[in-house]
Length: 250
Image 1 (cartoon, rainbow, N blue to C red):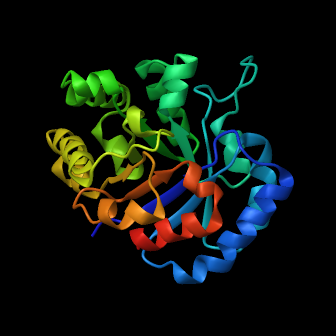
Image 2: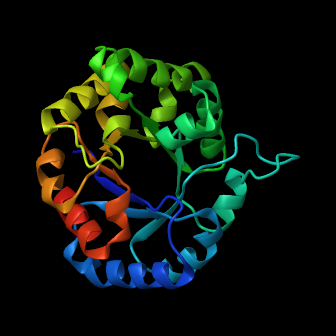
């Protein structure tokens, strides 16, 4: 049976006071969570404080992005080795906001994916289509292209210790959610595509769903055979809601 993972992507939200309160609430409720790994991905400036607050707990730490180089004159970037020094386990790469708002190409995302792995981090590779792409019936072509960039650079074996997050862009922060059947269809496509190169890898890779997941819809989404947890945005900023999602995954 594949592992389950719920990761909270806090995006550019929070303050020292609010994250301390949020983590206190999550830690108080972790006893009710079983059968799923739990991670939080704070803004980079809060990584050291979050690492301190979750030390000795079962909560894992992730970053929202990672530089595609390991060191050098790359102003504003944070390297994988730097993140590793502060206890990060995961690094999100290719989130739709990075692709759409900041113009990150499939090739750059693939290099970030590779850099995370070099540093011993588990990349969470985000893939997904725009609303117009879904309406045009090109979802599989778009997601396939995004996967191909990583496969070309890193090969199928890179997914042995990686995570994929399917996030339909039209369902992120909009309140809209793909139906469980729509999400399952794309998750199954991703698994089939990887299986075309190595079935054993495809069967084991964790594929999360992200896109307005809430406590109320999490159980139905996570009951689908190819959905292995979630990459959670807004709902991860509320301890009770995030815990409800974690319980649903377990």
